[in-house]
Length: 224
Image (cartoon, rainbow, N blue to C red):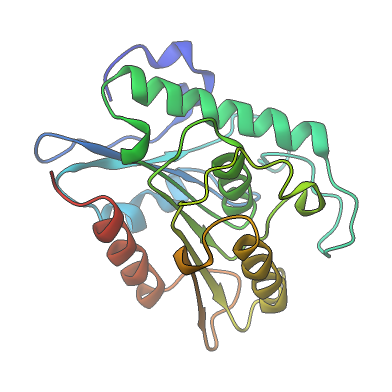
């Protein structure tokens, strides 16, 4: 990455990898609860494309026992939510997006992604961002503050979203993912929503899922 990372606090903790040719696009990936960017670096490097800045697995540097983007008060659609924490976390990710824009990557060539809580934050950030982004990869997650949509949306309708969910996920059961996909279809162009499920996959990723992620990135961040 170029520019001064220290001006964007989360980037000081980001895991970055060298590119292979002129980079004309970027992927920002957010880890799940209790994980770190390092936990996803190898998986993301395995699907990297030469013209896309190596995925930036952003990590949260907190002096807590478990890294979290915002306070998680429950794992059901009716659980109370940490509204201020979610909005603050989204603002931090938007600052990374602005950093990439200032360094020459236009918003429509920037994609957000994440797993679990990171995927949830990616969805919320993309839907409330002033820029229309290239797309969102949402793995094993949900839409935070879902009751605030569609009014909370920035109004960008043409955001491609890939949702992937394990059918054996007991932490975020697959019906949550299905309800999220249905909600998303009421916010953005429903033809741009893809919801894939994977038999026997628990709350984790798989080679088949990462292959779908790579295909999605190739489709919406083509070489230019």
